[in-house]
Length: 155
Image (spheres, rainbow, N blue to C red):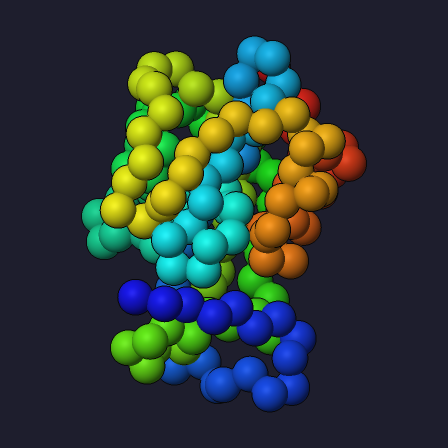
């Protein structure tokens, strides 16, 4: 399924669903960040997605990271809360989603790189390498918030 992101775009379609979601900035002991290249928009992104009934937002971030990258992680902080009502995702099936998203800081505890049904590539990057990657503005903002020190430091 394809997806198009709209942020602060006056021509964006009106949201027809509101979804709680979580993402994770996963940082290894070398200070590298884990990213996936999304299949639906061909952009680099943090692992993350919609929360399921019966799970907490931190559990969602851990599950999504495992599913999308192959790594089990431990949540060690919160990068931020992202709730811009002028940021929507339009899907091919007609859903236009506004998300309430918490971005967590995490560290890997087990696993290995693995591509999922939702990704075409999964890699570790030095923080400075991220600037050259194709990425939607909302994900870049989360990465920049972390890099600029607006988030807890990785241990």
